[in-house]
Length: 465
Ligand code: G3I
Image (cartoon, rainbow, N blue to C red; front, side):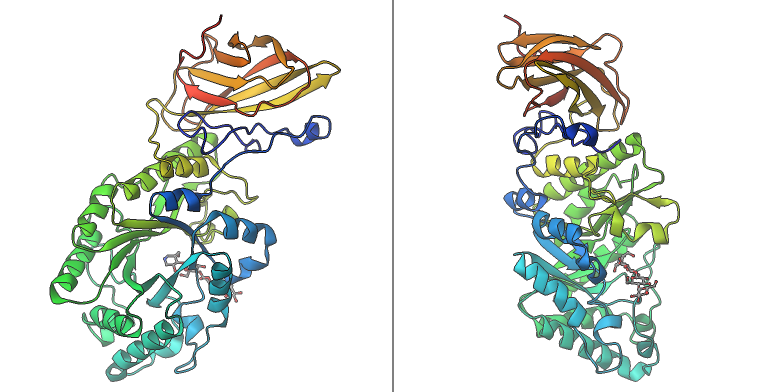
């Protein structure tokens, strides 16, 4: 169902796709190879053109998956070490430091020309048990020593550090971590000071989840940042993790990013994923695509929103299903590394596109039979967003030597080599994620056109001569 790579609508034509009709596996053997395609810029490149980074988290066990590392190394401009910079790995026993696993990822990122965010120095989770046993009077020194050692070790190699992670509860009170209990409120400021002393160049972030929208938790972080700025505590940024749910992106996300920026700190979306209740459906994919697009646009709308990181990029390695049973499919690539509508929505948003009024559609062209001198093809038109569309127009340029005999389930106009097919009276309305097909019979070789494009609505297209 999700196998064919669709041709994008007008908003992304040129950047995202040129061709892209892909043959089904069974027909690939008999049909000519599809034209070289396709997505001409990676997400990392599109973000870079906007002065941002677009990255992914990764974890060491995944690095033996060559299919995975190929995309990890080519699509993204930034990498976050998903686990192995955490205290449990880097100081497993008091005073014994080990950066082997973290360095494997940093080395790989550097060899791919990618920047790296450090995650994370002080967190209540993935903390070795010995830290809990440190006497209250010693914990501040232990914390400072951990920060100093780790930040110094990676000095010059990381753009950001998540210095303190997840220190607040949902109601805005402080989480009663071992640091909070044994050091008190001041531990966060002390952590930032120690990190700055160890590396004056890395940007220092406070990182948390459920602070993407305005509410008690983000208010508490806001007040902390405001007070740090007033007191000269060295903080450079706020990381909004953005573990979101399809259909529930906070309406205030852009305003919230902006209010932090107005305090004089950068903002990064540090762990983006948008989960859904399984199983996946086309409608849920469409909603998720809208949500990814909205989140990317919210970041781009604020100049101090410096970048976006996916919390890994493929459903194959998402943390979500193990923590939220029955939920998942949260990332822009599925478990087989196929790009989902979310990917295209991110690319469109990074390219400057907004949601088309009334939705957006894609067209997927496949050859269904061929013979000496002729062929039939089927084009699937899909509404990739959650808002319904009430008409569609599919266009392409005829490959050399081809002509079209007739079309069914659509209205054909041909002008020279320009083909336009508009919906029939009965198949123009497509709900969110909905699809329909039309068929055609043609003469000539069954070459797949390189520029199949879908536009919502009955656009004028090229008038017939
Ligand atoms: O390394 C052991 C392995 O030896 C063992 O066989 C296996 C058995 O379960 O566990 C492995 O450790 C797991 C570790 O990830 C590495 O894969 C832990 O059980 C597991 O709990 C841990 O989960 C990580 C989680 O943080 C811990 O809270 C996720 O991978 C990681 O993606 C997740 O990341 C966090 C961010 O750091 C902070 N924000 C939320 C985000 C998602 O929870």
